[in-house]
Image (cartoon, rainbow, N blue to C red):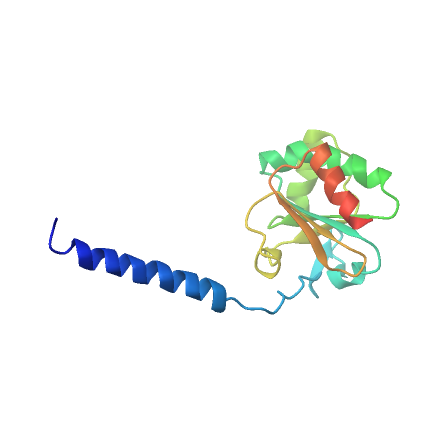
Length: 168
């Protein structure tokens, strides 16, 4: 047997035991703070300010998207359809980093007409505030403004129904 093998085994035992001890004792026992709809002012397509905190009071589905994002383009018709069907839930569509002209070109191109509750986040502030790390990301907030679900990537009908069920 190699002369350092015994020392290596003891080192591994100490490392594993230390990791287990840290896992048991080093964990925080406090609950993680709730993620809330941020106190953040974005713009409507017409340039009017809109604070996201003003949405508290009804459940919110907040979809972040961009015109250049292929999965965003594919999921948009489903989200618009569901937004029209859901009376008690506010659907908000936040365009990340683009202006009204790019959105108008997109809407004409895909023949969607208009997007209700469209907000512009020209500086992509939500990326930092709500940890939006890719597009599309759809966030689900209850009536108190607390985050209850997050979906990264294109959402399908079944997944959307599951998240909406959490809002009831």
